[in-house]
Length: 306
Image (cartoon, rainbow, N blue to C red; front, side, top):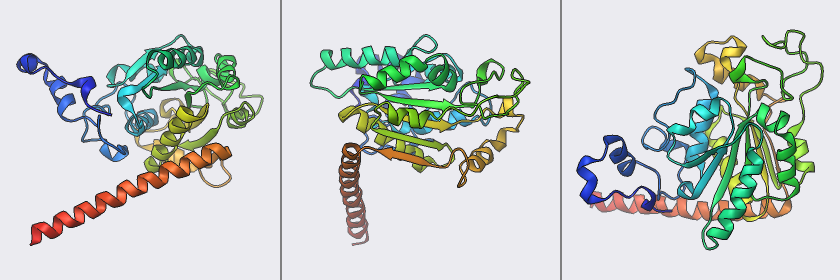
């Protein structure tokens, strides 16, 4: 990585907007092992957004953005939904696809980038809600996995259509009653993680947004496995507190309750043998870098004291 994507011409520096100057001076581009701890200090990690106060999707979006291992060479493919309101605020290439066809768009994009930039790593990440992923877009989601497209699919699971009034989705809980589903859901929640495994995904995870360290590790693993091996899938519970009738501060508690042992969002992770080997290798390399940084800080302190 480098900061070339946002490099500013010195001749134009005096007339550039302060927002852009801040982006150049305070972004995570070029930072090895960037992560969720960079949130709050870096200009590129969504300072503001247009989602509801306390929305878990805003947390998930920030954690995902901060966990991209190669942001300047990453393209996000989104779909109509609450997430489409956030994409204009991010400093990463992104495409707004038609509702449901995000995996088809991502497939073509990934192949084109591989031909156009054969000597560069270009990551393509799909981010969509449960309506786009498991309902209207299910065919294109599954077909991209069948074809072994090297893309990461992330589903923000609201358990209903959060931005259009609370209609029933395939990921809604059985018997759950919503404003636009007054009779309640008549069948079980679709087990999309298992479908992903059966469809050939090499890394699959299901979790909530309550633990940023876990989100960071999962997203990083998913993207790195997709880059080298094949399709990956991550399902994150991002409850719509508005439709659930909860206060803005209750989103975290809702997620913590849903991830308890035996609950529907208890942490789940699947790796093929090939993916597991790659993840272990990458983790070992990161540990070496982390230990080297610690040793460098230690020596710097000793030098300062001397």
